[in-house]
Length: 515
Image 1 (tube, helix red, strand yellow):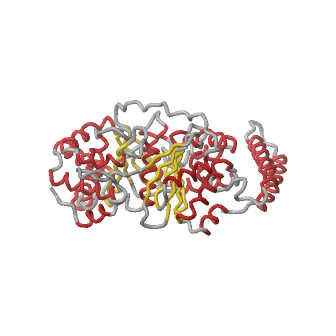
Image 2 (cartoon, one colour):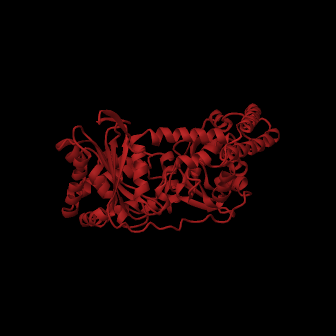
Image 3 (cartoon, helix red, strand yellow):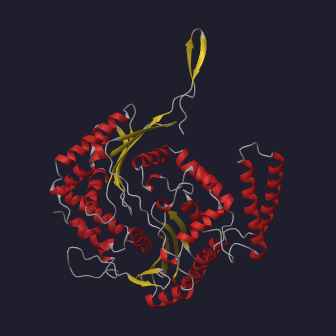
């Protein structure tokens, strides 16, 4: 068995003040304190007094999995809207702004309805409405204070201001000096109570541009979007977090507001604090600013269960790019014991230059410039995915065959004791590095609380230590099989037209539309 390196030992010592527990196989136990308000808002607290900062997260247990056709992408859009201010922040005079915002909505709906008429739209009427809309928006712009929340935080020493949306949750980040914690509570409680969907229509256009950049004009983004859409035929993991193009273009402010009321309530949220504070003081502060926000009826849970896959699925995507390949296999949701062995499989295949995929496909056979495997950990059953880029002149077919060769080796030959221990050491070190700062701790606690329970962190290394070489081969045989896989290949799009000589005449032959 390999001994821990000096670096690992020093890193472990960093956490003595954060963890409790006897000298067992896993002494790392986060000492997180919990408090739940009467309105259902949960507060998770971890003291860390080495530096005078507090890393605070407000996470909502809502992501793209909670959406429905017609409003896909609304969680991500709402992430943008959360930075547009409230009745207090982001405006010079909300009383004057409110009727203008209402009129903007009315005009936007009228223009949309006129343009969508079955008979030809009245162009003159549309022009009149659009002119009024532009006049209204000019008046609104004169009243808006751009990025006031951001500016206020920055003036008081905050950093790391950001947000993220995933399939399962929405996350809001802020790191600030310990003596500014009450400022945070004042701002964030106001955002939860009095959010205004200001600049909604322009921000919707921003999201459309983001989709074009990250998905429609990205070979990897487009490939993964198509892979998920074919891998899942029923479960909402099948649609992209950023949303489908037509949904982004047509989602209304009214639908977004309704979604906010349903999912962004205190009983569907968790606050995480890590840093230099005292829990009793933090509880009083959160009670003071957040307790008067009413809880809502618990939002609906996803009921659709992805049916068992009964045969390989394949999809080919055309794009002006070098080829790519991605292969996914269905795996269980967080909490299933097989996930720990799948963590080992992922690391065995992909972590570092001694990993099997790198040694085989990149160094020895030299058929790929990138080859990677990873397992998704989701609130609902997710996927184990392989991705590769062939090295010219090698093909995706060669790369695909090489993937299957490595999978078959894993099924038939368990990793050696040395190999297994090396992987466990790597996973343990990576896991601890993720907890190496107050910010990292806050991220991980909040992330796992959204997925299931923050205590997943306290059990991870115990469970990992129990994985055997036979477990690794068993999960490979159980999940990485042909009937459970979906293959997506990105091929270079041919020229838009091909010219053929047919009976002395040029004849155009157009390929099918990619979309």
